[in-house]
Amino acid sequence: MIILRQVLISIAAAFLIWRIGVIGTSSHYTQSIIAGERDAVDKALTWDKRQPEALYRKALALRNDDPVTAATLLAQANAHHMADARPFFATVEAALTQGNQARADALVEMALRLRPADPHIRQQAGEYWLLRNDVKQAILHWSFALEAYRPTSSKLFPRLFKLAENPHTRPAYTVLATSPPSWWDSFFSEVAKRATQIETVQQLYSLRRKSRQAPITMSEWKSYVARLMKEGLIAQAYMVWVNGLTRDQRKRLGLLYDGSFEFEPGNWGSDWHIHTPRDVLIDRVYIYGSDGRKSLHLRFDHDRGHFSGSLYQKLFLDPGDTYRLRGRVHTDSLDTQGGLKWVIRYLLPQPEDLGESERFLGANEWRDFRFEFQVPEACTLQEIHLVSAGRHRITGDAWFDRMAIHKRPTPLKAQPAKAKGGN
Image (cartoon, rainbow, N blue to C red; front, side, top):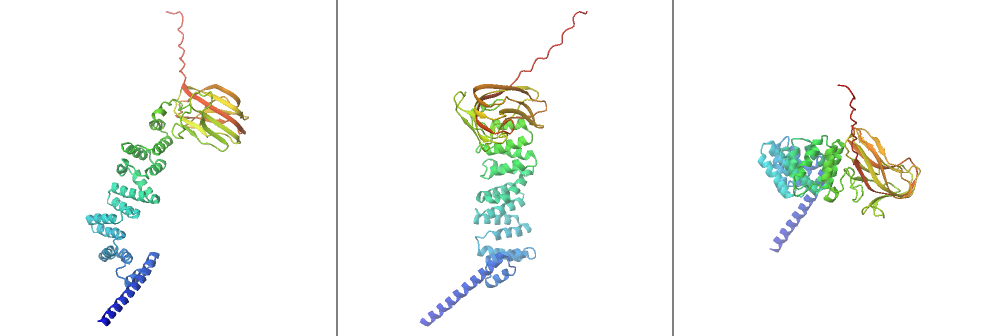
């Protein structure tokens, strides 16, 4: 009895050692398969006929020439390694080739149940449903993939972009409009910049506006307004920008928005745009003599370049009319040969100056300034910006407040004098 037990133990140990060797050798060939060695598949199956990776690769090689054997091998790969969803999608192709859509759908669902958070599986599921002409399902699965692993955007954004550009598939984006995913703002920004037709951007924006759960974000507003401006749709861009303002901000609306600089510049739409260059401080501060809580303040520290393009606002004035800009200015040791000045220019159809203020320099208490200008008939977009006259070194401080633009009344045309005498 003892001898029999020792013999059985020896047989079991020998089998265990053999099995370990088989698995080890098979695993070695599996790594060779992944590395791309062509003959490693058959070698791995020679050592272990149940090796899932080898079964899967063998099935892929046979799926065109011998689909029946390929399907059998894929089924075996599934059975021996259920956590690997790739064989499911390979089997899906075979099912579709045979016209068995119900089986293909079921296989995709099985793969998703196995690894629902796998971005690669979600990408494949999206490809499958796009092949089945279910664009909404494709977009949803790609959205899951992007949520799980953002770098997939390099591959999926072009696919999503193509669907957005197509008028037939664009309505499918309603599936995301109610509650947009975290990647949506970045995607919409790309669409707003690169879409070949403005209708693509307009319709996606319109879909988003219908959502009551997730209002339009500031990023979407900015991207949309920028594209409208680029298209020359000035009136529409202005109205969209206005709709993005708060109730208090709308109180500062006028031909010049927030000329008293009470709100932080938004740097978009028809708000003030401020881009602070080197050696110049631009901020909003309270100073004695200002009308409100804030005034615009500029401090120059030996700026040697031409100050231009750092402070401006887009204007939407009626062509053919005359306007007056007024404001208040205070300077302190503003040392510059040319001085600072406000300039009104029109941008469309081509840039040209319409008028400019006096030059500000030296040291002066708060005082008023004003100038008039006329907008040509063809001018559809204007801009006010602060510039330095010439390319001279600037030091010192300047403050501006209570700036506004008003339309001047149209002068009455003189009536022709009636002729005296006659019947």
